[in-house]
View (cartoon, one colour):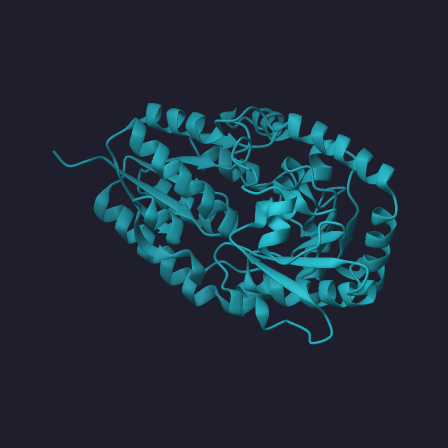
Length: 373
């Protein structure tokens, strides 16, 4: 007998990571064949990739325009495969600009849709929730405040918890990490996480490195984490001859756990840092064209998930025009000069983490999706 087929679509690094884990869990609950859009981790998890997410993962609105031909081609490929295979379900993972368009086509083809990691329509373009209510049979959300938002909008929803809870942990102690990357445990270590996509590196890394230059090699040590999905060479090309930076590959959690302070690109990495108790400064920048559009549509008081979950400013945010090397260097100096300030931040980060639900979010999501079969 032919196995039931499930289409799964994830277009960005964090979503692809969650989708790969979900694929493994789904196959433990049901004898199914998974196909769709993703990257190397999903392929390793046994998903048959119809299209590569690297072709559509971009940062910012102006950048997305350049990717439209690839996105349109991949959209057609997925829709045609869905029409040919008639999947029992489609699991859409985050990536709403692409996945909601795909949802329209799949819904028209009679495919049932579950959305894992519900689109953050509460932050921008809130009218999309009406589209989600019409197209999506069930939303599985990972942040506690999202459940109330979706439920009040009439969308069937489950809060499954955050997939990173119970999954984020270091492999090495601070002493072991320092020894591996030739760092001195007696001097402050600053972890640098500029982002997981090339566009984020382009916009975030140069000002971060300039801020490090202002801070000085003698006073601080800098550990630059190479995000999964990126190559060392893609990061190393931004290296400066006047700045000593230790590249860290495959040990981001160790870097965060060992750091006295982290400079983190806004996104999933802020939740990872919070779970590891790492005091941080959150930064982010996009092109001016993208920023002009985003200012018109973003409807949240904060940008980082840590502050959004807390409902207050727990960590400093330097976004767009506020993200300058002198300003960043000033914030880093202020926090490293205040042990009590960093301890207070750690306590508030612990409160944030307590709101993310218990471990096992992926397993709960897999059980719900398998039950829908």
